[in-house]
Image 1 (cartoon, rainbow, N blue to C red):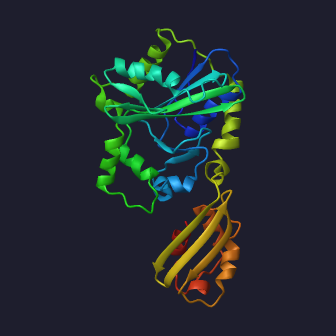
Image 2: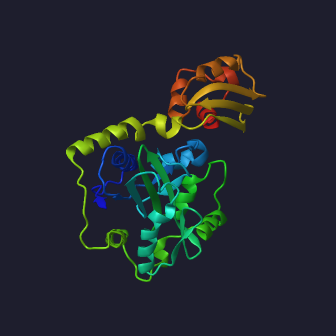
Image 3: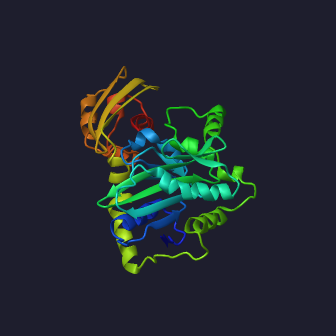
Length: 327
């Protein structure tokens, strides 16, 4: 096995690009182990609708990255208290064999006094609560199995990031999450930093003090940047790739009730209808036409409405209130 050092990069777009590069372009016989810690981020599963998994207002206000990964499964929250591990191997025979890749992690956690065990197919539990979720992806004759490890994450920020904004966050909801997940740090006999835990995992998995490494070259980094630019830094991948979905939102505004129905595919508005008991001097069909084809995100919608006088369609309505209803 070879270890790849990501040079303490915490940008999730680059870390996911490193992982994909190791999968597709680094053809070595030995399995590869890759650790990374991300800045606050929501990592979306390959097949998920991003806007159904996050509170876009909260993640934007708190500068939380939203990045889609290659593997399936659910959305997860990363921050500097979350350690991620990835095993990259040749062959596809271990697809769905999560035990092979979680067992070394479980072994080291037990050595640290944490009674960890594989729960179900792909989760690691300790003390009756989840501390790690895992997913896999294959390309050609190579695959990776990667997982999170909650070490000292901010569980309240996790909940607020992953919670659809239509739902109210209450203290009991935070407590409910704490009843289901926990941080490894709370279970340790001896308190450790996340860096010390990482080194314990590294030496435990390799079974020695010497760690064989694969050093990323200048050419490797060029390919990593290319992958990040072509996928993980793109709105089209992180948001636009979401499955086709419909939005229906209704609000009692100052001009009366306004109800919008939006069909979105490939991240763009395919159709929009606006209903309500408001009064205006122009047909809202003109406004619907102006918004059709726009990218479904706040800035694009704002741009589409920049030169539009919406009072002609609704009466004395603030444009910011209408935008808040649309997105």
